[in-house]
Amino acid sequence: MDWNDNDKSEREKTKLLTKIGCFFSAVILGLLIISTVAWSLLSPQETRLKVSESPNQVNSIEIVKRDDFPSPSIRINYGNKSIMKTKIPDEISVEWKSDYEAVVTLTKRGRDPDVVHVEF
View 1 (cartoon, rainbow, N blue to C red):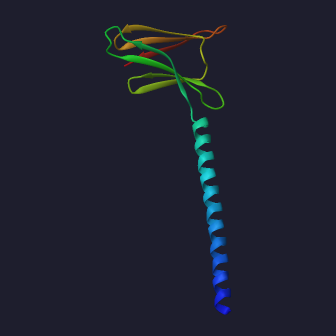
View 2: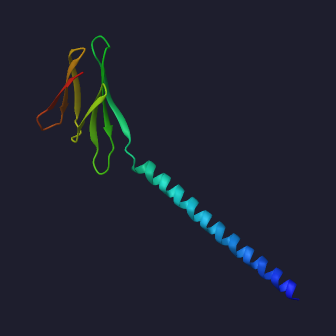
View 3: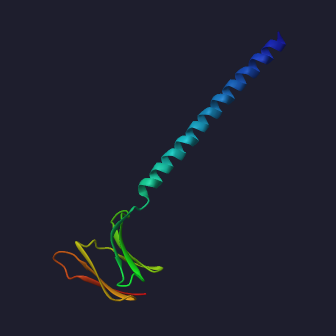
């Protein structure tokens, strides 16, 4: 009788440990899924607004909108550099002076235009 009681308690203990292991595995998996979804939603998304090539296609300027939290920003990428602006313009124009120099004008209705000189 003692052998059966010991065997029965071992089975109950194994069942309990299996349930605890499954519970913690489900919790860890749930936290992993939630953190992955939160990270993908909170990471800034970029939208390309304008790409401009120099007259002889030597250099290019890319202007992207980053959906940062809490407010979006504009990033002017050129060469290995970038310039960040916090005001979202209504109009964007790029005027090339040469293959290595350009003027980016960011115009917002009702305000003075923001002029950025870009040199490569």
